[in-house]
Image 1 (spheres, one colour):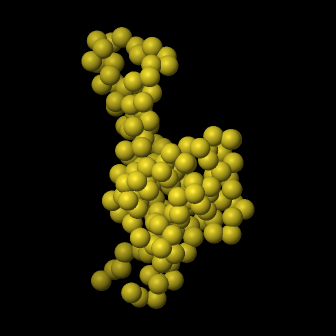
Image 2 (tube, rainbow, N blue to C red):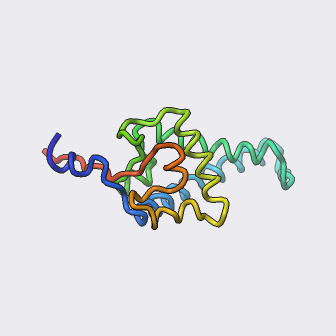
Length: 149
């Protein structure tokens, strides 16, 4: 492990990097949701999905959960996190399991519910961790840059 990798190993990512990565990811997630909705409307022969339809809302939630959890479990980085060179890890620096990723996603929704208070908490926290990170034993850290040879 070189000195840069050792220094960045568990250095907390800034809240601004986290927010920028989230913005990137929300653009990608929006595209996935639009694609899914287009498919649903096509299958329904152009008929709109009635507001509040449980299966449609559940499907949107499942798409979001699969998007974030899939990336967190396989490499610890969504595409937005990769662009901003940050990653999510367990408190010991290890890779998240599916259960940890699902818990982090679900508790992230809970942390965002009271006007995002649990997410804004990152600005006050010494380790820059939101409530969902504290509750699940995860952290978002700076990722080492790829070495150029």
